[in-house]
Image (cartoon, rainbow, N blue to C red):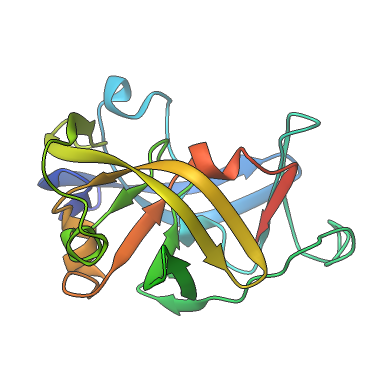
Length: 205
């Protein structure tokens, strides 16, 4: 046991127990001295989640064509060779935030969220895009077991650097991570795996 903490999920905040994890081995690499929150397995769909804190100075390579995930240093995974597009990001609260994205012409901060299947945007972006009226509604489930109601809409296109993504669904919600990252009042989104799967491979460094 390592005390208690407040965990911020996409649907709310929850006080959780913490435990010290001496070692996690992932492939040929080991990570030491981690502190992790205890969560219910049925809420996260696995025995655990490897977070940003366990991946510092590492590259995560998602090769959808080969159905392969690799974690290592960038040089061991081939550097930047073979990638058509390289997008730079800044770090805030441990997250990588891309600041040069345009969603239907609206400048938007984008956080890559490989733990989410759905792309979630804040209400500030919804207002800028004028996505309102009779929208489809859905429920977003959090790793905390909580749920939140969101409006679903189709976004025509998004541009990040030289990259363009056309026609994808976004859930608009007042998700707590936006406030935690200081992204509540300006257009922002958490990009999920549904959009990343549109590429042959993606590397997050």
